Image (cartoon, rainbow, N blue to C red; front, side, top):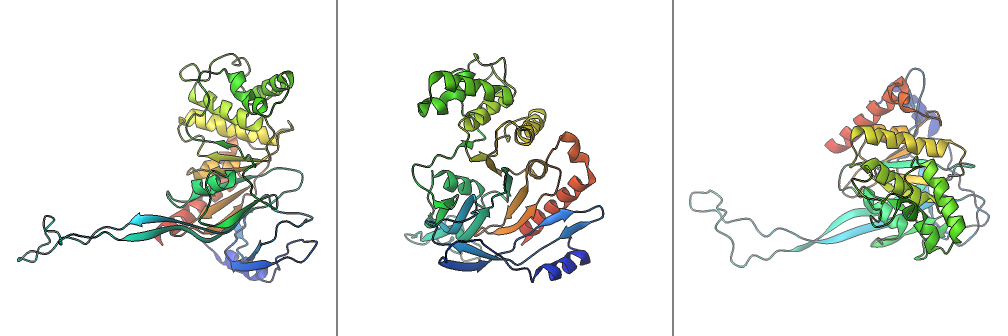
Length: 354
């Protein structure tokens, strides 16, 4: 719930200009959305709500000193739908009859608009990757955003940029899915090394890099086992998927509810693993975009959280998670962590009621 301290902070921030570094003039279009930064203090959240101007850069073929890692610009997504036919006629008693239909009812076509002039950015953080989580109710388009970024789906209109350049068909952005995606007729080692094999990396180098990644995700000793259930647990199969997607050293990793099918113990273990991978100095440094419905998971893993509303979707707020970079499971009992949980739950409930 917003308090007076939120309002005072808003008044202080409204005058802050938005700057986008550029070497040359560019053509721009402007739209206004709400950008949110939430930072817990020892007492209360300090809400630096700002109605910031988001500038979508239209010409990305120029060089910039610093560009966003991901930009979705002016996205529109619509689907053709068949609307319901006319309702049943009313009989002589005034009651609607489900058996009496108009003669030759003609269903009509309509449009389901998921995104309309949708804009989203994942900013670059110098010298480290970041973990961005997307929250929102079912059907608002969270997974669709991931499909745009990895190139398996194109929007009706709009553009997607990676590192300031328009997304190309040759771009390869890895994704970890909720469903187990390993090849069961291949061993753990063969699964993890597969991206390197497809890139024609020398066999010994691919082997060594895959072994190292298997150690990082905690699967040492399982290299020769087939990647299937029940030989391996669900958590171990997801570790294989994460290792396979990280072994080729990607700059971006997408995760679509990767722990949704796991029990609570394995899910917590995977959350700790992901934080361990990215907070230790092991050369793994991609930017992660995660879709989840689990608020606590999003706070524990993320550097910032985007909350979407729906019909059509917009970025309702962007919450910067001001918690220590080094995190373990005890953080979930920290008062600051619980403040984030309460704040986001209230925000999600408010959006649901609107």
